[in-house]
Amino acid sequence: MKLALLVYGGGGDWYANPTALKNLAVFCNQKLQTNFNGEEAQVEAGSPDLFNYPFVHMTGHGRWTVTDEEVRNLRAYLSAGGFLHIDDNYGLDEYVRPALKRIFPDAELVEVPFSHPVYHGAFSFNKGLPKIHEHDNKSPKGYGIFHNGRLVIFYTTETDLGDGWEDPEVHNDTPEMHKQALQMGANIVQYALTGGS
Image (cartoon, rainbow, N blue to C red; front, side, top):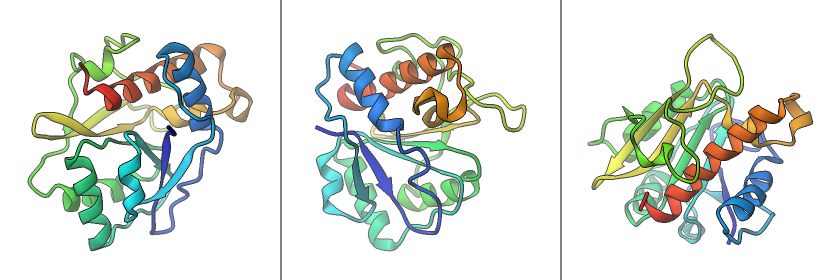
């Protein structure tokens, strides 16, 4: 089993954090007793291969556009038990919100309460997301799309979790920041695999 990185169109740098998922997979194997392959999978939004991965991660700094086919495929994947974590690496927000509205037009993107299981898996984050990197002096926020009562899309902003998963020397993160990012990432993966149960 592999953690998957979403390959998307529009011009955004979906490949922005090359060491992130590798490190998260190793951490999950150590802390959650998962058995992830250390190499990430790369999967296109419109590909049937999407259904092979219980956890798909998306990141980047720029544009994201979705075709009608990709909208249908992502909706089917998420409705069938899949999970998408979007981490705004800075600059994605104005593209994420309209894309999510197309994927789930009847669902609202809401802030996920700190009591939600995604914050209380193997590690407890009673105050929500950790702050890994600073951009606009804003608090980190975790938003979600819920489908049939299940969190299917978790959208994290003003935190830079994916940067925190990378090799520490890439962004000169402190050991504590690196650990917090990986712990929160492990919680997200755990939720994706178990639905919080």
